Image 1 (cartoon, rainbow, N blue to C red):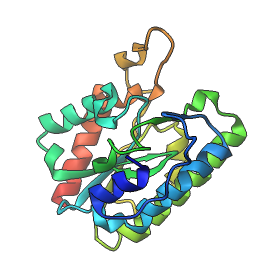
Image 2 (image 1 turned 180 degrees about the vertical axis):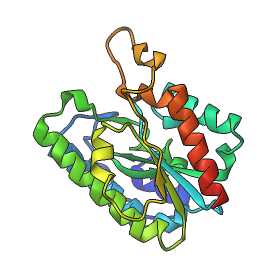
Image 3 (image 1 turned 120 degrees about the vertical axis):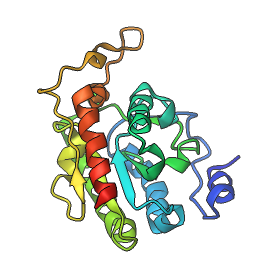
Image 4 (image 1 turned 90 degrees about the horizontal axis):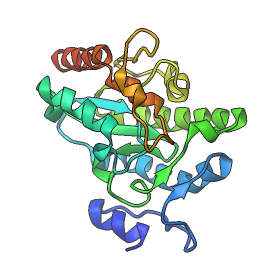
Length: 223
């Protein structure tokens, strides 16, 4: 099924077709990768309100190496903490990444289920370009979606992450639950895939950081 048909069948909107010669998994860093995803990201933004729910609080957080996002150990850990706190089914979840700002309901849809951008492979120039794209996507999402629908937005990223740097000065965020990598002991830092991959976002699973996140969401729900 084409990208267009896949998304159109799911949410009733028209998406640009992926190039016929696109790989099964879109990997890489840099401007070319960002440009490839931009039409998809822009289409989601222009139809952002089509993805709304009746939940007033939105959690905007990381993507993940594993796809779909909810199947990754990072998001499993986050979702488990939210479930144990009794708030998992009270918030919307969106993911901010090189592919755009993506609602959780599209996590199994091409191309959002089959891509990877690895900051460890990115140059300083690549990271600057990524920050510019992330800030653009997030700022537009706030104005097109969160603000008009009066959503209370909670963001959850590492305090030293490229994404946090991109959005930290954006207006319109209700509150930020920023994970502190240097103040929380996090055993999940040691998790690798056959010794080849270590994800710094594992710090988001630190118990102190998860407690901060759940408290922040509870405060947002009560506001």
